[in-house]
Image (cartoon, rainbow, N blue to C red):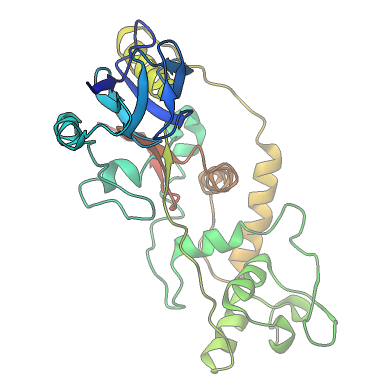
Length: 332
């Protein structure tokens, strides 16, 4: 008589297991003690044995299926035995896996935006001498030139250190061109050849207003951006257990936090050089906070694993980089 093989408890703490690989296929003979599958537990990938003698008549749990201990995974019986009724009964007893609320490449819902898209927070309270400048560069939302202050800061800080005055070469003719860092990045994003733009800055240097005037004349080209999609990373049993233990320890064990003081002289020098160009162009100045936030965003772009959120059965790696700044003010 055919019997159901169940998910075996392979460790004292195992509550569920994932079928990693079937070592026996449908129609293969099996005997007690013979390894029939590899199962991923909360500790490691372990081997599951057969407890019956017979033929593996049906595999109920395909590879990759996550099931609780005791759930049916296969049927073992005699060659040619009709097990259709047993298969239907077994499938009804297999618990349905809860679907994740967010799938790969799908944007978070409105109720999740607050936690998923703002997953990274920069604590400006740890750098107290910078918090007083937090509103300097963000007081204006838009300007008559069509660029927001945030966009200007983003463009400005894309220029590598030490390249403020470095000349670039025109795509046509190869001649050297002097342009401000903001103008260089703006031209890069808009797809404009600076060799076609006439500069009005000191010594014929191209500045932002020259590039905007060039675009308004109808000669400029608009750039395009490809939105990075969120990525769903499946969890192993071990990572689930580690996350559960860490969450428990965070809520039950006292923690302490360490604050370090760093020499920001090179950063301040860079800020001053940028602000000189911004002053010539009539734009808002940038603060040290802006540079720190930019550094955080570049770091998250380089290491996207950090820009992620924990979900019930997976890790959601965010396509967007959203950074919030906590500013210390009176009363909060």
